[in-house]
Length: 57
Image 1: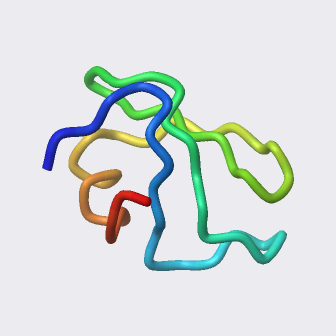
Image 2: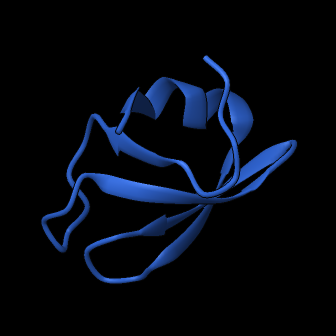
Image 3: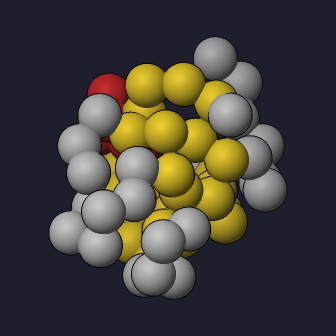
């Protein structure tokens, strides 16, 4: 699946704040994701990010 900066994605696991929705901030070797529940930003390796994302909203 193709992802672009600004896309909203749903993950398999719930973030501790209770949200499953993330916004893609950066794409490259790593994905930078921002939680839409609390605003927490994480960097995840591309293969791991592609595994944890279930669908694009």
